[in-house]
Length: 255
Figure 1 (cartoon, helix red, strand yellow):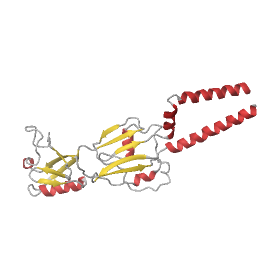
Figure 2 (figure 1 turned 180 degrees about the vertical axis):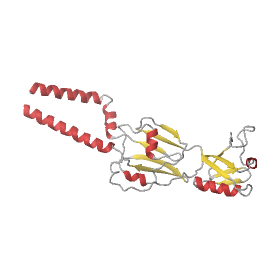
Figure 3 (figure 1 turned 135 degrees about the horizontal axis):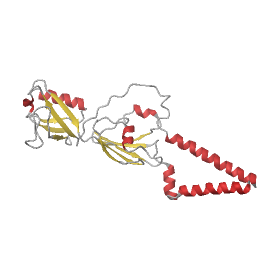
Figure 4 (figure 1 turned 180 degrees about the horizontal axis):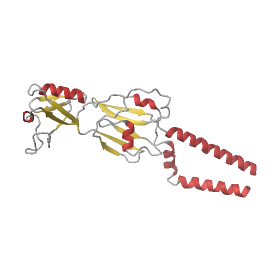
């Protein structure tokens, strides 16, 4: 009887070891990063999309000549010089256009920030000598949902955010988050795409989903452990602790 119990215990221990090894394999990020070839970092610029909110400030050697282009959001809240407070923002419409002072309708949708900047410089140059444009996307944000510590929507000031950085803003994945099947929902040019990313492998860093675009939604689904625990109940750990205690008592009895 002692031998039979020992065999059962040995089988249980092997099963626990196997599950533990398998869990570590599914938890670690970038497991093959040492084997991947080192390469240059990707260049990335966000593309202006409908419903983007833009801040556009025109500058020149003589600040007074930029006044017609820098309409204040509230009259009387405008200051000439480096301190340009309350500058009006511009909403990109469904056709990718904005209405810019003096120039009129300008199509910026589908352009990168640099391309849009150059287009505005060319247009303003017809009225001002050597103007410069400071263009920013003000509503650049991503949302992270599912098995993360702090799900939510995060506003990004830099306009350059990686998938790993977005997950870190949400406090990283919980131990129950499935690292091999992260969903990135992206809308571009009027189309919505659903893309699955495996962050346990390093090849995603060379894909178009390494950098986030504005309004991306990241969904982390639960792994099988979380699904099983939700089916059995929240007291599963207590049950396993009780089983471990019974095994220990059994060893002492049949020793």
